[in-house]
Length: 323
Image (cartoon, rainbow, N blue to C red; front, side, top):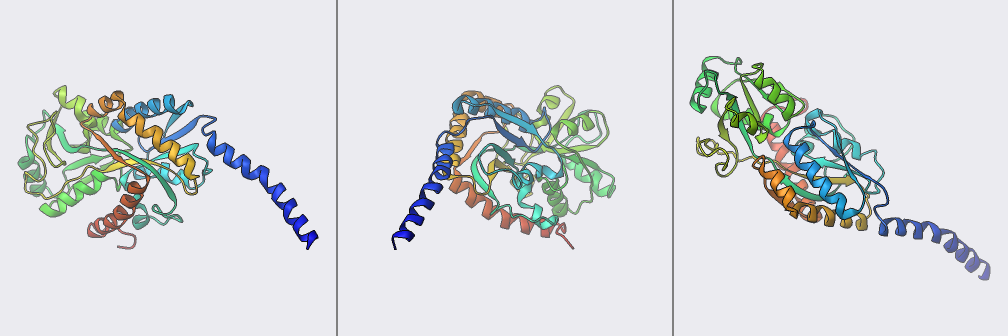
């Protein structure tokens, strides 16, 4: 009996340094720079707003939050990187809505709901469809009329295959009986270069198009929120055009599965304070975006619910695997 107690005591002593070291690392977090991987290229609305958020969070955490751009694959590359990252809070990722569609369109070995720790939702996009201001399409009726008269010839760009701009435009087209020619890009910056250069006839995008609209180079045909955007008061919403769709595509920040709760709590608190800083609110306002806060529990619930609704959308558009 005494020998067994000695063995147990020795085992406890051996285990204690590791446990205390783990607890200490969580309590002292962060002790080095944090990497925040975002899903779209430099220069677009996501990049500009997330860099401001990261700068604000750096001041609160006492360590740099370094933004890394990983565009492509419909905005899902950052979430995929979480699957091989250490669950220590030093690798974070933007989680666009496209992440919840991925298992329905691509064979993957991870689950967007179970294999990501949801830290905080920060905002969502204001979307719309734009065309060149000097082109033949002057309003939404022109767009629809041209598409109906020329099936498959009206080319529009988006920020990538299976992104919200792509799928929402295809849903609009399906409801109106239109056949469009989709051209995917890696993000808003590339997309705006393409439409500005006359390579496509229209673009479905977040309001990264604002500078070109204000410069008189692009025209907004519609926007996708509940109400008209202050910056583009003449552009009708989809609902005003008789299309019962609202899309604002919330996104936030995730960490690898298994990230310690104490670390998640510290990250959440820092990014929540960073969201409340006027500099972030002003950065969002440049693109008609607003703060959309969800804490870890609410964000995880949102992920679960969105995973189900996106399945229905992908199947409706005939884009599911094997369809």
